[in-house]
Image 1 (cartoon, rainbow, N blue to C red):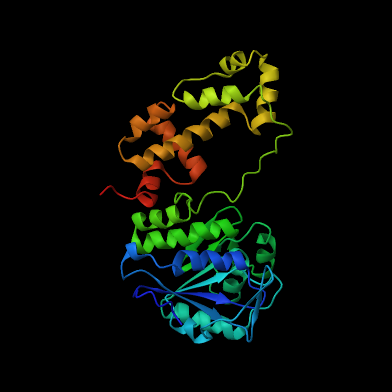
Image 2 (cartoon, rainbow, N blue to C red):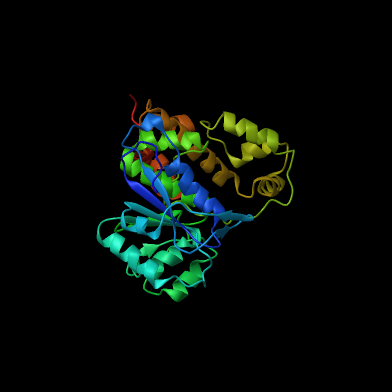
Length: 325
């Protein structure tokens, strides 16, 4: 049964099954199931829905007994599949039909990580784009060739169907759903309770394919601190090498060993990160932000910001940052 929090908002139902992915379920329960009096009576209602009989085993040596019944699927406004038993685990046809019926009446369906295999089994993802954890992407393509599988994004959505990558990406997707339903201020409030930023757009990469540094260099660390403190300056590689009293060739090798990237890319990443902080504050326009972080022009800021974030600075501010009171 839904939580008795006195709220009257959309009913979110998380599926429970034998072999439950505990962390993924916890994400859904944390975001939608906690009482949040600051959100008012229109906040979400939450319920857990078992799709298997009897006590259910969960990762970590837990055994669960659910309060609800599968009929909750027929009442839900949002249904979340928190992971699945495995890519090769069959999805019961009865569950697939319930999910199809729910979607047909207007419910939203969402998955975290391997939960995409459940949504795929319904056929609802056919002809659309979905994501899952990069480890499962090839298997999802092989089993469901009618789905365009995006193995790079954090989350994707179309036609009230939401899929996300690994567990942490599930948090991003759930916060994105909150943002769409209740606005940026509510999404930011939930994110603060989780002690995480509410800024990651779905188009961001699941991971960066970057070489792991073989060793840390204490010789480079003071320079990195200096660069972070003066990103607005036009640093050249030669000036950086001189700061470290190294030849250019030695400096480039040591810098890559210490950071896993080139000086130019490192500076760009740091400048974009600073730009994100300034966009949160609503005080500066794009030209002022670009000058402050060292990009020089709004055009250059937009270019690098979109390349890293997948959206423009203006979209970032509009989507993820609450308007000032």
